[in-house]
Image 1 (spheres, rainbow, N blue to C red):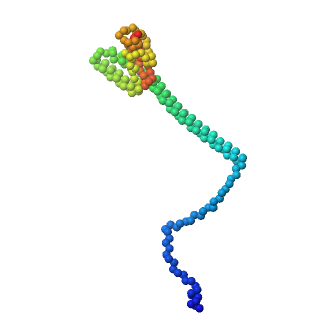
Image 2 (cartoon, helix red, strand yellow; image 1 turned 90 degrees about the vertical axis):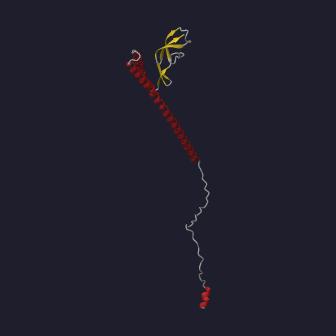
Length: 190
């Protein structure tokens, strides 16, 4: 009987070696698919629509405010540039009379006089400063009369010059960029 019992009891057999992967594979539990149905009441729908309108209005206000700020920034930048140009122009104006007086002083000395040479150097230096500031002399002599740049204080009949040509410059005119700082005072031929 002891042999019989031995035969009835199954002996454990060695299992073949199983290879286990280095990283264990986890099985993700699948969530059961559930179809949910929502019922929306009229009151909830109206509330949703009012919130959507409120959001749209807020977005519109934001866009308008952003555009208004951008326009404000551009406008103030332009105003700053304009104020700077106006201040520069008004500052330069009184110095133009000084330039005229320096030119007159040069003519008071004879050619070759060291004082004349010194005054000419001062005039050149002053002209260089004006040019650095963007101030240029308006060319007038022999040019057609331009009422936007010239101030005619005298008319003469001169057959050697074309009609409406500047015959003489009494006072130089200056411009800064496209803006006239001081009109040239001229005599015009008819």
